[in-house]
Image (cartoon, rainbow, N blue to C red; front, side):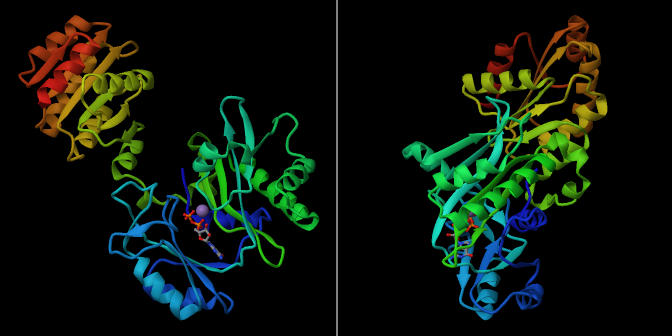
Length: 393
Ligand code: GDP
Ligand code: MN
């Protein structure tokens, strides 16, 4: 789960991580009250969406920049008016962009130098890793590609934990002065504690800055949480913004379906994550494009299968469906009945190819054949993929 920058910065404050003063507005009527909370001086106007690259982003109304610096409150209000309610496209949103529904005003900080700092989980070593770089404000993937030596990595053994010498060490390696190393160490300790206690998947600060006055401060905050640990954190769950999520994915989560929308036109309904991946691969292999990832789980019932069909068909780009089920825990005849009931229920209008394998497969195939529905049966995974790709041509 992702959260907005303004929410992440509030959590940072709770952990003693230095951030500038800020105020939130969700409608133009709230601009004045929000701006009144900030000290006089320059103000940063920040579009709140769950995507990076806002500064260099562009609105579909032609306005350039999802993050802008205003000289005063009056100008900040004008800039915010151009952002709120409009669609911001950044290199992370895809061409459709995201609607800005919240504006965050912050007191502008001066910048002497920008840095990059992140904490995330390294799957290869099964350890948290701190990533720091002097190349702040840039796209970190670009830095990694072109000047990998400028990226510092520090792995934290969870059995030993964080220790203040790590902050000092990294601070000096970044070329910070004595006073800034002290501040950086305290900030990093707070960020790391936050990462652990709240079960984050990633905390990214880009840029982390040293101001002309010598203060170390987080100017941006991108935080994502491990969904599997969210049950431990009702306070974090409360920060979820459904406006930022695909409505189909929200609906799927209500039925415990693992669904991820993609941009192809062949929907797939599969039991098991590995089989779902293989199904997407083989669709692609035979020249098709999957419209989604969908794992209905090992013990899906008729209600879930029906919900899955409904969600799949609510995507207007879907032109065909491939059902690929291995009957292990569930038996093929039961699955066949579920598929037929679901197909009747949602009034199927696109070609449907079904491949069943496993326990009671013969019975399952007979039930499908006798259903009277336009279901194409397939007897292997590649046969199924070929048939659905052909049906679309
Ligand atoms: P992103 O583009 O989505 O990563 O949004 P950021 O919050 O990182 O803002 C984009 C850029 O605006 C940053 O890289 C900074 O260069 C600049 N910026 C943001 N806040 C401030 C600020 O308080 N003062 C100054 N001078 N620049 C800022
Ligand atoms: Mn940033």
